Length: 245
Image (cartoon, rainbow, N blue to C red; front, side, top):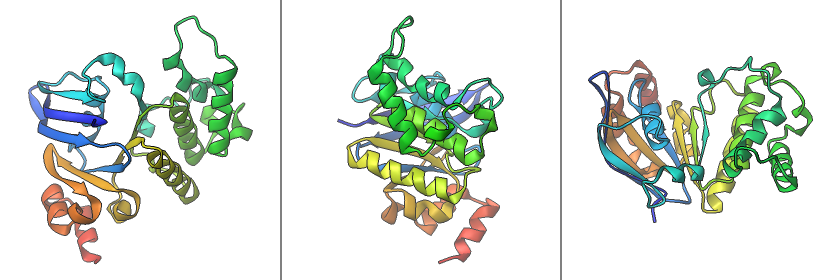
């Protein structure tokens, strides 16, 4: 069974096509890099998987089902600019939200929930920060908090939208180590990523998109200069990449 199966997905905003006829089959046990220029539809693809936008055509199956209740199987780490960092919440408050999908409206956190939360805080080396306000943290610490929240959800699939933006190299390496551990346990990880230089190091498989699917498969096979050039067209950051071999 595929973790995510996308069949003929097309999405438009105000009659402007953002994604066109996307077909993808995402298997468990791999870290996928979702790569493409600004405006390529990467975040829209995530929103479609999370059923936050209505497609114009096509369907998305999560673990073989199109049912909306399958969303509990997906944990999501948003882009930094999607988060209100001044919201009055502690690190513990944010991380504990990862348990909410498993609770009914009036349920309180139990001993099992609190154990899972503390383990996630410890895994990300932020247990000493648990009583700090989220807005007081550095960019790297904030990203660790949201990954800890995702781990608390204990989902089969993890979506991360540009998780390495604004973080220190120590945090970046920590995140990669955790992602590798997750896929070793059969989980699925899909990451929107913009740094072309690190793609070969970080991802088992890549998905190159620019409103349509440009290339998909094992990183060593698919992440070629030809496919990158076709995906990025005249993007200026591509020229710098092509100079390095």
